[in-house]
Amino acid sequence: MPYLISLDEGTTSARTVLYNERGECVAMESRPIECTYPQPGWVEQDAMQIWQAQMESARAVLDRSGIAAAALAGIGITNQRETTVVWERATGKPIAPAIVWQCRRTAEFCNQLAATHGPGITAKTGLIVDAYFSASKIRWILQNVAGSREKAAAGELLFGNVDTWLIWKLTNGAEHVTDPSNASRTMLMNIETGDWDEELLRLFDVPRSMLPRIVPSSGVVAGTAAEHLGASVPVAGIAGDQQAALFGQACFRAGLSKNTYGTGCFGLMHTGGVRPVSKNKLLATRAAQLDRPQFAVEGAIFIAGAAVQWLRDSLGLIASAGESEVIASSVADNAGTYFVPAFVGLGAPYWDSAARGTITGLTRGATRAHLVRATLESIAYQTREMMEAMEADSGAQLKELRVDGGATANNFLMQFQADILGRRIVRPADIETTALGAAYLAGLAVGVWKSTDELEAFWRIDRAFEPRMRDSERDALWDGWKTAVRKCRA
Ligand code: ADP
Image 1 (cartoon, rainbow, N blue to C red):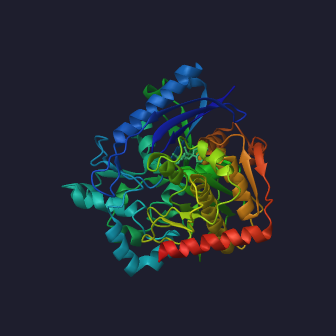
Image 2 (image 1 turned 120 degrees about the horizontal axis):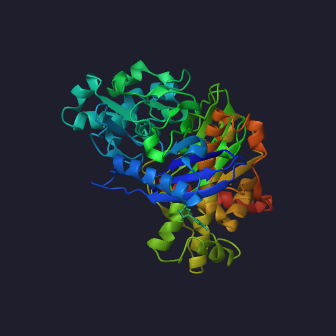
Image 3 (image 1 turned 30 degrees about the vertical axis):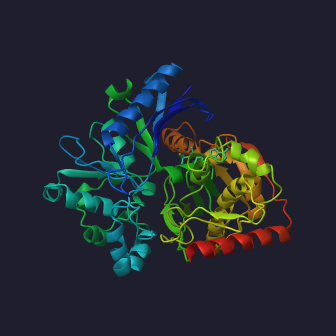
């Protein structure tokens, strides 16, 4: 029986998941990844630690399952996107700490660039100029690490997001590649042509020789060097985490969408072979692709499950994230309380970095339960705003929303989401969709599966939540939320 593994390298941990030919998880192991915060707003990781943690989790999965690397048909790789690693071609040594996607050190440069070149860059890349994406992070490293600009010009340095870094290490430096879903988050790729863009490279001062070759998300790149896992295994799938989750949710066609409820929320709607152009501050992105280019529109909400963590860790209102469900359900309504958790500004569809967290509508009757309820409700309201923007951009009406991520365990949140969105919410049996998507991409490349039709049969529902709120109630709540958002932006 053929097996596949996914290397799922996230912001807080490196995980490896082993799948059988029915797409079922057989074993999973994870190792933590540390972040360091050398200055306010800066976020770094150690690329060598990322590599070691990833390999430890992979070897642990093989040990624990008793399955030899020789029995693996392929490896899929999925990763935290945008995080930037620069290393020496000759030695494989990173020349600086990895700059993590959350890092704001290049915000000022990006603000200036947005003022002069914003619309042009958005037209080419589908992205909003922001420190979030890789280009300004590469530029920062080349400007701040002594001697690096000369080395880069001489072709001695390589850039990669975490997918590229891991594949380079796995192949002992033989392959320097990425896929379109990751490349579309660098702000250096033209989203339509799928190639690095000369004008953007000049603007960010990045030599082309540093950049990886862009290969399809599903396809055999090369075998790993045997020493890492005990046998050579084909690297056959690559996708950024959110695009991998879209694939893992079996959203293979235009109109299908998923929302991931974790620290933040990431909603993606597949738009097929058509590049979306957002009028509502959403991002256009490349979806994972087999042969032809595929696109998606994407919205990011910065604070979702993180607001629940805040209730637990900073306010002490709940003992665990899971308890929020019981407490929120203990009251009949929010008693007029709204909480906009704009701790770091607002993401889609506002991109307002000046907004700050706000609680409105408090009366003497408000209790801990109302505040907990308002927090969970805020996740659903933010998601509705994002999904409405997606519908407006795509001109397509959402029929249902597929969900995944840690906070989807909360049944109150899922029911309220269905109610406030007025759409069916579908929670699949396997909510580890990111790793699953990468395994699907690899399995299609090596022939474990023939087509995506076969994969659709694997996607099983755990529970569907139907909207059951009266329109008048939904409209009144929505008005309350919109008022709260206005206040938080004032
Ligand atoms: P990430 O991948 O971003 O680390 P996860 O998908 O692991 O996130 O989800 C963790 C987040 O979900 C945390 O922010 C946590 O507060 C939230 N969360 C987990 N369980 C629940 C729950 N039952 N109800 C509400 N929020 C939850």
